[in-house]
Length: 129
Image (tube, rainbow, N blue to C red; front, side, top):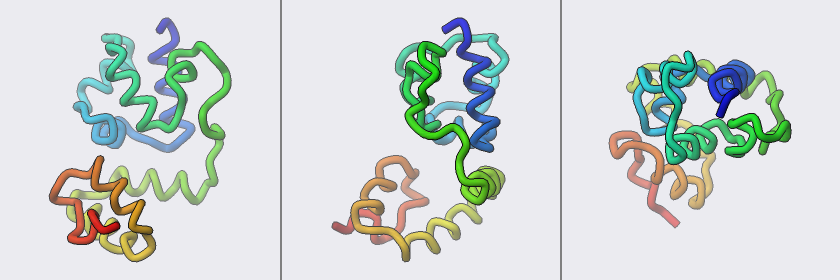
């Protein structure tokens, strides 16, 4: 985990992800993510797994053990912009965004988001199959 903080910072920057978004996605606090980014603390393996999942990379890649990411490092610029804007949106606006996107989701996708969104973000159809 020697390169963890550097890798974490680089991956976040490449994906247009801020600490608040990552903290929410990895079920931790923004202060905790800040400590990891700045190299003040090293996460335990459970947190490393959560962060890797949130970033869409393998644990090996996040830890600097491989140069092969689970996903292509450079995403579509449009998706990067959308991710960046979403991460800056208020909770109210995020709810509106999910409400709009729900029209384009399959039942499987609605079920998937129900596992990682807090109850207040889930729609009435999120459990539909």
